[in-house]
Length: 579
Picture 1 (cartoon, rainbow, N blue to C red):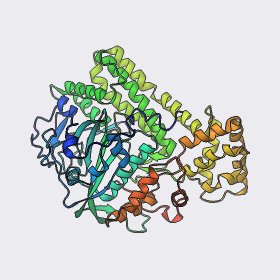
Picture 2 (cartoon, one colour):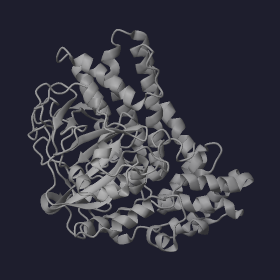
Picture 3 (spheres, helix red, strand yellow):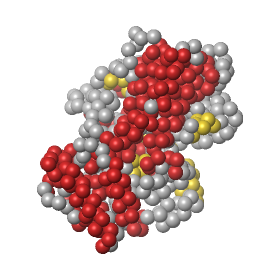
């Protein structure tokens, strides 16, 4: 398996030390370039001024112009300094009044190069390969879409195209009756985790900024203090926030599905054309360097499925590598560009469990080691969405089906390569891995700490015993189990002893030392509700360097097992999707 950062290189190609030149909205505006608005079709029933804040059906078109609903009394919480550097933005810019106005939802008085409105998009819902319309208030799927997320800017910065999207900026036509707001709790989580995933070398949407309202609140169901309830027990008043996430595009598999369904049923005369427009836009935005645009369109579709299969299988293998669980991996939460999107009920595995699932509504089908299967179902829906475009081209249609049929074998290869990499092996060893996973389950092992401690052992150049990894155990291993650990460690060490220095170095590049632990994040967003942001700053620093040996203080604080009091704790070990 490649280095942790290599698979993300296509996504992070401009992460270099660029000069900070953009200090004003006027300077940012000179980089605006709205390819989506220029090439795709607006909803013909939309209000062109963006005053679209009530739920309604959207029956055609790719997007609806929408103006955000600004926060009242906005307050700066944080911004991502590394990502500002990538974009060529000055850190001082984040603290200006004009930056605060725009990225807390006020699009008035913008330079003429910038649109005075944003846009929200529709998508379809499928769960584990089953198409759904039941949760749509209209019963037909025309109400699904960006209910509280809307993009406000597309710009080319440092030679790369980025789309900036506000989350929690009020209602859109897709809000299905909800308030369109995001609470500070979920906004802090998403703001921090996107940058952590980037630091882990995993393709992801990025975090630009976070603002909260010091006056407005919304009620959400949540857990009582000290609760071990599975579901929230009480309505809690929460400050609201707007986070800005950024990506090359926000095209989801669910969007392709929506137009694929409409074309399949010939719902309106332009349905097939709108599907083709969206696919061409996806290729241009996400795959221009991989797909030859001079090829016939149908041949490009085959190349698109191959390229997306490569990205999606690599992505999910990396998720498992670092212990990440998406929690709710529906097709509408699956970015067609092959990166991590929509951090709702996510979590990172601490105590290793095959079926770890942080979301109370997720079930085993979206659990930790089921993610490769969930990805396959999303890929199948992706291919199905393209099918109407290949109805008259049986050769290319069969080629796409062949790509779909081989997804599981490609996913299997990626997973085996990932496990070999975590263990420092040149070749995957199924027996060795299965024995290890069984021992980890029987013992009760912290996923991140175990693999990081294992990574340090080859450099010691001696046959390890169980004491060398016992720091990762949640309870001591009894004699028989300890002996089995010794036998496994001996078998593992015998496979790498001829190249111990390289093995250790490589393993530390793929096995992070520092990871997301919910019990560290909870106090950060609780203090942020009171206007104290120092924990957020500390977590930003720690999570930005997950592979490095950090200070003794950081290690003592963040490199340790979850305290027993947090096991089973509502809002820590598990949580609902109320955000």
